[in-house]
Length: 96
Image (tube, rainbow, N blue to C red):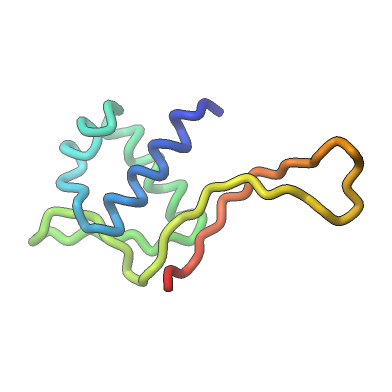
């Protein structure tokens, strides 16, 4: 998976959290992707538990609950060999 994929997920997450996505066509253009690809990103996020909704009045996506995505590498400590073991985790978490 290209790095750009994760950057787009982070950008979509940020814009949803600030309720600044605009209409789907605007968001897709901003991300330089097709609307179809945007809908695939949104479906993936929803499948991972994100309560994404759309406000027709404000013309923006938003989360139905406070929260966001955290995409990071976590170094495994338990039983680690000299070579570090890296795991990619996508975790939906609640913001404080």
